[in-house]
Length: 57
Figure 1 (cartoon, one colour):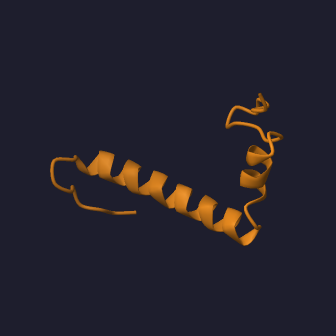
Figure 2 (cartoon, helix red, strand yellow):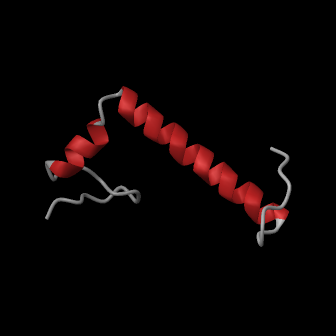
């Protein structure tokens, strides 16, 4: 991805931000298409956090 610097952010930071945003948007789209299974598990207290640890109280 070849992006120019934006505002006060250097080109490298802009590219890193856009890459992270793209990754999050794609993950969200996959979760939505799958019926938000991960979110349902978290709500039920059966899910895991990003480090793989159980989040149930």
